[in-house]
Image (cartoon, rainbow, N blue to C red; front, side, top):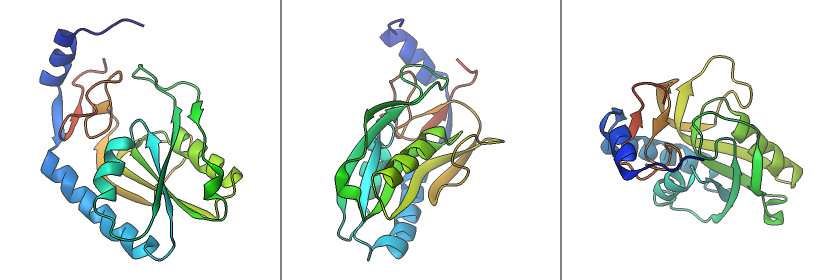
Length: 186
């Protein structure tokens, strides 16, 4: 793994195209929260942030959900510090407390759907009664290999490498306000 310099990372950020502002992200999260509240507020859900990308959207969304719920996390990855996906690597699987419960998985984006489908499958195997998914961003990807449609989403974007609002560029820039796309597929 090549260590990225601060200068290289600043170059990526400065040369990226902003797809959505922080205000647009916040408005999308408001809408997702309305829909989730409508559907899940009486179901006593367990909300699972899908780490690491789902951490930021989960934090934004949880602040908008004003009903009883439990919070936990799972951690699986296909990317690591790369910009292309590989095999699923599980770091933390769902805990047994989801058995017999409604689960809401929160992730940053739906692209090929492989990671989210694996997360859903693991929740079902652990005994969840029902599993819902929420993502901040859905990429316009043809022929998804995994989960085709998420239950809740905020924004759509072309199939480009994106970062910010939880999504990363080689494990960096999850903290960018808004959502950005690389101008070329670095």
